[in-house]
Image 1: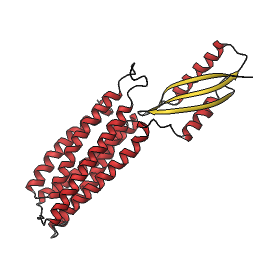
Image 2 (image 1 turned 135 degrees about the vertical axis):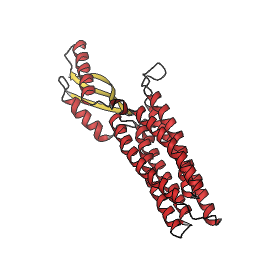
Image 3 (image 1 turned 90 degrees about the vertical axis):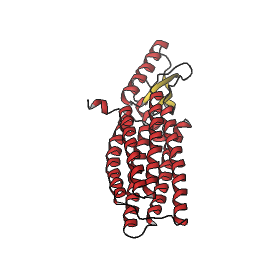
Image 4 (image 1 turned 90 degrees about the horizontal axis):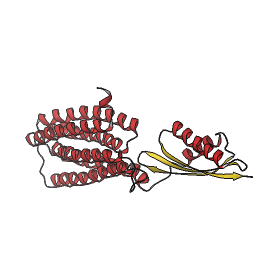
Length: 288
């Protein structure tokens, strides 16, 4: 039972259910409790629901095997879903920021009720628990979309803390602090969206695994039996993994069959040692 909860799909489904519940609670408490900040936070939860659906679809597509049209698999769908989450965050942040500014300068501030305080506090607790659960799943399965979803939960924690602070200060006699808290919400939503875009755009641009990672791989392959020298190595990110091309030099007097065996052994060794490597192509060159 516990193992079923430790998957990207399970974490996304749970996030979806929790966000639906929080959206309803925040919207009702925000309207009934006269809190601009909590209504803004409710909108944030509504967009989280849309984001969860996108992440779920991204995970499903990314899990499809390679086919004729996608010989390297569908892994980048995971990163594409993460970018969609970021775009949703940008739209949400812009709307919330505009609404908060209009409330401040339009003198539409009122003292929130204590119902808003209770819901905001509950949101902080629930979202922190959900963040810790989701980030663990995302890192375990190296899923960019799930990790993006987890960071969205952490952003919600910070957002709801700001909302809670604004509501409490508004109740203490400073009603303008409630829409100011809405601006706080907008700022952190923009910040989180920027982080997600930055973390995933390199993969979508087919970036390399990194200089240090490639150097480690070259050293590992260079120590395999039959390898005289690693001539060059290059890799590319696809989803949460890498595809590697490497050229090696072997004894020029061995047979084609022996060279093929060396290449096969390298492929197996790399896949066993580096689980994130999805495929290895080895080019064999003679050393005279």
